[in-house]
Structures are given as C-alpha cells and as structure tokens.
Length: 509
Ligand code: XMP
Image (cartoon, rainbow, N blue to C red; front, side, top):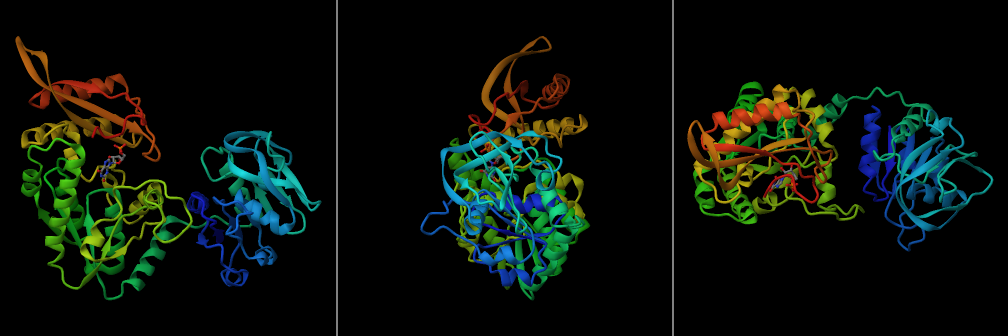
C-alpha cells in the first residue's frame, strides 16, 4: 500500500486516483499521522502531496520527521518536496517569480524516477516557494528555466522530490514518473483491481450499516445506480430505493430503472409518480432558476411522502463523487480550498433528518463506471451521459407544457439513437436536444409551415467545467436532422450548437 499524506491540495485525491490507475492500493492520511502508525500498515512507499501553504506560514502543516527513517521510499510533490527539503536540510525560499502553468523541464538524469522520460518535456507548475539551495546530499535530476531543483533525489535516504505536479494531465510524462516511483522504486506489483475497491467497500458498508435500513434515491443516472447496486450487495433487503417520476424524464427512463433494479437486481424499489404535481407547479413559469427551485421543492415533497412510509430508516445514500466534494468546499475540515457550490450535494438529508451514506465520495466518474461494470449494471446505464436533475424542464426554453415535452422527448430519443448508431455515444460526453421558444417559417410539401426549432448540443469534456462542442460528422448531423424533422410533429428546423464552455454553458438554461 502507498500512503498519501495530504497537505490540503486540490490534488490529494488526484494523486490517489493516479496511484489506483497504476493498479496499486493507496490510502490518504492527514499530516498528523505518525511514523509508528504507518509502520503497522505494511506501507511500500509514501507520497507527500502539494498544498496551499508556505512552509514558513505560522500554521503550515508538517509531517512526522521519522517518516524518512521508515526505510520506505518517499516522494514529495511541490509543498511535499519543500517540507521534506526543510526536514532534510535544504533552504526553501519564495521563488523570484511565482510559477503557474506549463513549463519546460530539462531532464539531466533519465533513470530511476525519470526513467523513460524524454530529455525535454513539459510539466505543470503551481508554486510560490521553491528549494533555493541544497546540501551536498541531494542530487539534481531535472530543472526548468526558473526552478533549478525541479526534481531531486536524496542520497542518504530513499527520498525523491518534484516541484511540479506529476499527477495532473498537463504533465504528459507524469504518469510515467509515478509508475517509476511505484513499480521500480517502491517495488509495487500493480495487481490491485477495481473489484478490490468494490469488495472492500461492500465489507465496510456491511459492517457500518449492521441492522440499519437505508434509503437511496435513484435518478436513473450512473452514480445513484452504482450506489444502489453496491448497497444492495452489502445490505440486501434493507436497502429501499425511491425513484421519483417528475414527468420531465426521457423516453423509457422510468421503465429502464424498473427493469434493471426490479428485474435484474430485485431491489426494493418504490416508484412515485409525482408528474402531475411537478407539471402544475411549473405551469407558466419561464425563469430557469425558478424552474429549478420549484422542481427541487417538489422533489423533496415527493421523496418525503414515500420515505415516511419506510420504517426505521435513519440513513440516506447519495451518489456524491469526489469532484462534487471538492467543488462544494470542505465540510469535514480538510484543507482544500472552497472552489464552487455545486447543485448536487446537500439539501435533502438536512431537510429529512437522515444520516448520510456516500460510498463513492473518494472516486472519480470513470472509476464509478468501472465499478458499475464490475457490479453487473447494464452497459447502457454505466455509460449513460449525465442528465440534469430538473430534466427536460431546462431543455425547453420558456414555459413547459405536455406538448413541448412530447417534442423534446421524441427529438432526444432520435438524437441519442443516431449518436449511438454512429458509434459516437462514448466519445461525446453529453448530447442533448433543446426546444427553442421561437416558431420559424418552412415549406412542407407545397405548404408554408410555421413550426418549432430544435437545437442539438453535444460536448466533449473531462470535467464538465469546461467543454468544447463535439465534432459530429455532417453526415450524422444530416441523418439526425432528417429524422427529427420527419418524425417529430411540430418541428421544421434543426440547428447545431457550436459554442464552447465558457462562455456558453452545457445546458441552455
Ligand atoms: P452547465 O449547463 O452548468 O452544466 O454547463 C454542467 C453539468 O451540470 C448539469 N446540470 C445540472 N445538473 N441539476 C443537475 O443535477 C441542475 O440544475 C443542473 N444544471 C446543469 C449539466 O447537464 C451538465 O452535465
């Protein structure tokens, strides 16, 4: 196992994820963990993460100096390198120029940590302080134009330090470096699999939820489906799933959830049809945020009405992923900076007075998908594009009626069918159809038509914070446009959205 000591960087979990990617088990520890505690845990190596502090800040977190005497290799990244440097006798100073972003790395020793890394490569930097002077026990492995000690090795103990961030994708050779550290330097084997995460999680949930009933809201999306599948394995009958039909779902969405969870998994599933309440609440409402508020409030009502019928349930399971946790800022006092308040976390449990179960809290989306496959969820569900909680309501610009829902629902079905038929579904991150609030003139047969416009949007993104429009081939767009115009009554024009995010968002509302 690799111990990651987290000094509160946004990158702590990212390091854990990169280690998992190399099929090596890792665990994250706070800076206060002692060498003694780690000694008992069969540690093959230690990674000290980056962090927002300066080593000279009054409350700067440090680590146990005896970590360097455990005889296992230690890799310090950015702040982790500076802390280690300070302990091992280097001089750390504010750099002449703070360095953020990509920079060129010149490798002088391409063996060990940097084996297989080209002499010239790019790395991602994000730091104010840096190592200013090293004692003779350090060997320099690489430098950048402004950072003379960008990668170093300590000769007396197995310590390596890098000032840049090998864990981010902007450091193209970063995974090679981590692989070298894990396999060559720490001697890890790389035989750890996603199934191990699943089995560990199941055992832990079994233990934590002994005798408890747990409620899980299913949305039809990947995250909540994986949560339900894993909890079902852990606590079986004591899992109670609730699916709210808000009338704003895609074609066959409710049926798909019923088929998977009742048929395949035989989960206790309660479907609440609250569509009339949602639709009457939304009548005449055009403002997007108002729509979201109404939908949020109705959802809580619907969920509550069903949850109350389940006796002795004290816990609510949610499909919170690591990026949601980071974007919502830290609740549990870890040191990561508060970046953005996200719409998916919070609200419901406070309102209903439940304890939270969040088994996916440390995972990233692609890992959740692998977990879903391991648990036997249908491929269709595991690889599904994200779909917003407010559903088709934010894909109808303006007020919502049943007729408009029919149009956007049919257009969406055709669009997704054709994207799948063209083999593009997994390549695109999210694909959607939007009904615009304008009528336009067309010709149908010999007649003038005056009908609606459907906008198609498809984006490629890894984090949904920034996105580019998908380069769908014209021929595929042509087929989609033909089918929508021919098959969806009330539509005579289809347009393709070619904006990137930012400044445009992914959804139109
Ligand atoms: P935007 O439109 O902000 O979308 O670029 C980013 C991602 O978030 C989804 N999204 C939502 N999800 N409730 C949700 O659960 C919402 O109100 C909401 N608004 C946007 C969107 O589909 C995309 O995946």
